[in-house]
Image 1 (cartoon, rainbow, N blue to C red):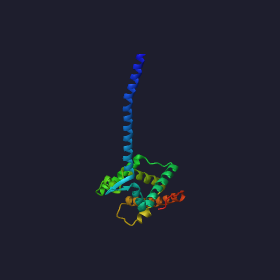
Image 2 (cartoon, one colour):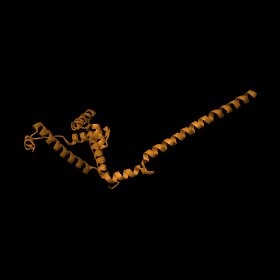
Image 3 (tube, rainbow, N blue to C red):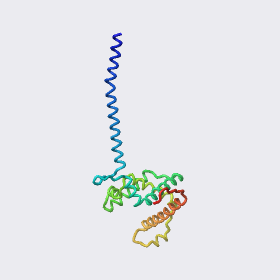
Image 4 (cartoon, rainbow, N blue to C red):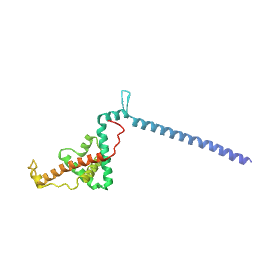
Length: 200
């Protein structure tokens, strides 16, 4: 009987010793999580402090919307329409095509005495943004730019005859492609059902 009492007392004592550290650990973990949430909430909702006055992210968003909300929304809608149409037509572009186009851009930028990284920084873009832009451009070019022909007469009638004929042909082809893209995009927008929830 005495042995049983000792075992019970030992178990009660060991439970009492083990439980407080678990509780302290749990409370410490909860405290750290709360601190983390506060830190990330502040970083998410606040963007600056001016002489102690806080500047919220919503203030910046409202200001940006005033300055270019409609234009930005139009760009986003256009990208969605192009992606939807490409999916519908099963038109895709490979990573190889995207990389080749980015290399062309990089070559042109380097020829002008700059670097692609500098250009992206000036535009406030990341490499992933450029990749997305190039993908959209290639998709719309594929869909709109089928069957573009340049005649000899168009080359002969070209205003600036100092360039080689092949370069003139490419220039005319590019102009025609841009016109076709504009028509294609306008047609996509006209056919689409777009509901605007905010007027800019």
